[in-house]
Amino acid sequence: MIVKYLFFILFSLSITAQTKGVVVDESGKPIPYVNIWVENENIGTTSEVNGEFSIAASANKNLIFSILGFEKRIIKASDVSNVIMKAVSFQLDEVVVARHFETKKIEIGQINNSVLEAFDNGPRIDVKFFPYEAAYKKTKFIKKVSILTDSRIDNATVKIHFYKADANGFPGEELLMRDYIVNIQKGVVRNGFDLTDLNLKMPKTGLFIGFEKLLISKNKLEKTIVNSNTQKTSIQVIFYPLVLYNYVERDYLFTFSGGKWSRQTNDKNQSESVKIKVYEPAINLVLTN
Image (cartoon, rainbow, N blue to C red; front, side, top):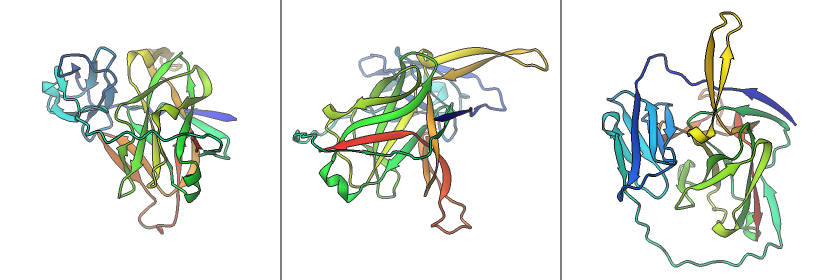
């Protein structure tokens, strides 16, 4: 397996003050791992375990706060010293726990290409799409999700998202009502997570699996860099883990940034049948009956 390292360096040409605050629920309890974005910009962060956050945003910008289980909020940066989020009220249907036989298993999402690239992908969510096939009727349960990562720290904490495809083919409703938070092993590792207890089924509209890096102090590693020409030092900050990606041909690529989904397609001057080359996160699924 060949792993190349490329880093997307995200920066702003203007100096912007750090906006700080804390995110809590209606009882005043801190909410960790809230996704926080500057609206329509590729600037984001994550609230810490104690609910506190800091983000580069001027006072007149809108900040978007979102996390599963709570209503999304859009608030002026000047008003976010104490953000109160309201829990979503779910109308629970009758729970039917289907029996898992697990006499059949298939793995989907494997890539023949063994050349992988590792990216510091910053504050965004990249997804991989798994289209539904009629053969999955016999293995409709999602048994396991695996994701290939490179981490220089132990137990980096991340979120994995499971989205149904909506009527327009975009990532839509999430299959879970609460965030699925996992820890990633140190090194170049394929991390596997057993989903049996979640009782998830492969949606007939297809499934998007997304990886959200948490920009929290626990995941941060700082390194001093010396410029060989000027001998000046600077601090390089990387949030781990790095996700490994395959370079593949696809019809499109979805990315969540600035509080919304965007879709990359081929050039409008080309035929719609022409695929594009994209970097896709190295994620596999195991289905069972």
